[in-house]
Image (cartoon, rainbow, N blue to C red):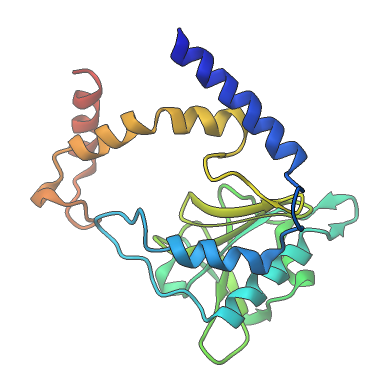
Amino acid sequence: MKDLRNFFSRITKQVFASNTGDHAGAYKYPADLLTPLKATWQQGRRRESTPPKLPQDATLQYLLETAYHASFTFDEERKTRFSAVICEPSEATTSLVFSKAREFSAHELMRLAQVTTNERTMIGVRAPEGRPPEIWGLCSFALMQLTISISGPGRIEVGRNETRIASLRGGAFVPEDYSGGAYGIIADFLSTANKTIWEGVDWPGGVWSPEAVVYPGYFLDIINRVTR
């Protein structure tokens, strides 16, 4: 019962903090995300893949600031919300490549945001060294790549796949253990069970890989693990 009380107390405090922000110090801006992003980019990587090298600082700051400015735009009365993934088309799945790449700008992000959703469709962005970033198309996923998500005005999040690394909301850093309201906190609360299941699956050869996994057997193994 004590653990349950502590759990709901944590939910209340974190949801309140996420809505009010902590402005005891100076406001934070996209450039302030570079330090935590670079410091933790290689942490928590999965066994089957290694995160790619991050873009150069100047390019990374441009990507973050452009996405941040796009968050304040509207198409008629619709807010701009989107997720962008920094990768090449060959690194993404279910890709739709434009015949001509588009400028990576707040205006283009606003336009494309109206035909995407944060969950299912992402804006594919190429960030070649020494050249301006550009939008190459749309995709559904890109393993281990940098993602930049906008959920509302002034709300920006950077991460890898579905893992949040750092984010800003209301000019303040969102607490590291806050994952999007009560739903996210409950997911965090169950993370130990999730890790136990993942580590307990009998992967072919001992390591997960897209080529080696036989999915029917994989799901059966997970079901058996859960019912033990």
